[in-house]
Amino acid sequence: MAFFVFLVSIVLLFGLCVLGICKASPVKRIGKSKLYTWLPGIKPMRYELEKYAQCGYEKVNKSKQQPFLLDFFGHDYLMLPPKYIEELRRGDAQQASFERSFSDALNISATVGDLYLAGIMEKVTVKHLGQSALSKWQSVTEGSPIYTSRKLRIDEDWKSITAAKAISMIVHRVTNLVLVGQELSRSEDYIETSQRFSSTLLPAGVWTNFIYLGPLRNMFARWTTFFHRWELEKCVKILMPVIQERLRKREKGEGNDEDAIQWTIDAAFATGNTREIWPRRIAENVLHLLFAANSAPGALATQMLYQLLMDPGYLEPLRDEIRAALAAEGGWNAAAMDKMALLDSFVRETVRMYPPGSIACTRTIQKVDLTFRDGMRLPVNSRFAFPVLAIQMDPDNYHSPRVFDGYRFVDRLADGSFKTKVLSTTVTPSYLALGYGKHACPGRFFGILKAKLVFAKLITNYELKWPSSLAERPPNVSIEGMVPPNQQQVILVRNIVSTVLSR
Image (cartoon, rainbow, N blue to C red; front, side):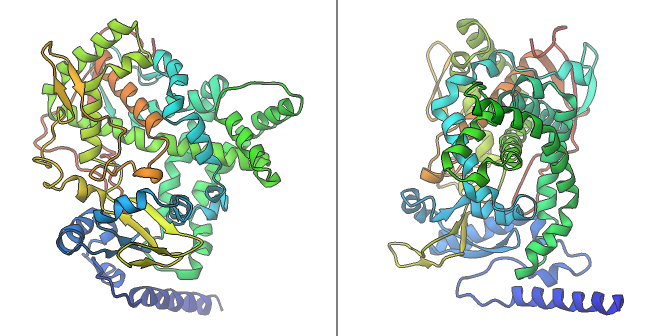
């Protein structure tokens, strides 16, 4: 009997795969079939999706000004040419939903249901972590507890560390200081557990996306996300007493905590939906907000470090600018960060060449069909995105786009200082890694501030170098269009002076 069930399951899976492959479409499809990539020795396209996106951009988007289809996170996505960007910029953000796309891509419903569709995280981010709220984070820039020296035992002797892992740990601690407050951010149990939660979310989400499962996708995701759900439950268990105490204080009209736990509680009550104020639901929102606030800034700071080590000529100009800004403004604060124009240009150029994803601005059509001025219609439940890396590497958009130029977005003044031409947080039709228009990432201001802070403190407090000379930059990881920095690369680090980085 068991063998019969197994056999039926295999046949069903094969049928679903064939069904997924044979779906007809008048739009040109780029890439290999899933069955073909199962053959021995064939590299699945999910591990080099940026190459297919580049090919589609050049052969279809740019040359014909038409969209193409690409299998992305196990779904058919319509990759749109840039001519549609301006029209979408003014469109209804609810009709074209990022939250729905993200939730479906990573099978979020298998672990936290419709959490993203409720919009609590977006409300919290816009109100408390957006551009208008950056002034609140002077405490982050003045005294972030980065703990690098203490945790990694860095001193005057060279020490070998895995760069991506170390920077991820630093960013995670800085983020928690803001999002959950002093008490939890100093709890090693919480810090380590929540970092495991964040690090398992993506692997759990993409494990089975290469198989077309159709209506069975959510059911399979329940089975294949078990290791992430295990970490989720441990984090929820730690957060629940804190949240319940906050709710009791709120009932009594007490407490004025300034962190994401309180912001989420307030946003949940503002909805008038009793389901959103369940303590567990609040905990899940806080944890997913933590994940969103950690992943991209950590990747960005790592990419910046790799680029600096490949081109060390930027090191002294960056150090000089940072030290001058600190001296002028009296230390690590928001005003000092605003004076670091070269650093900001270095950030923007890094995001341009090494964005977290080669495909972005992902959206799913909801409520009613979306019709463009040229007559192209996207029906409800269809998905679209833009091949942003290809756009950002287009020679029609940037001079010598494949050459890293950290000075690209600044002008040099007569006194040797730099003046910003365009900020790293400013989105344009040729710089889409952070979204665009109403669909731009509201957390980009906070995320880039953290990446700058971590990178600036690293290069002003430490000497850093490769263990041996590298001829080429450490290759990025590539899976489902995401292109995070190399996760295994080791670097050598030692103190410039015998001080703790978090001083």
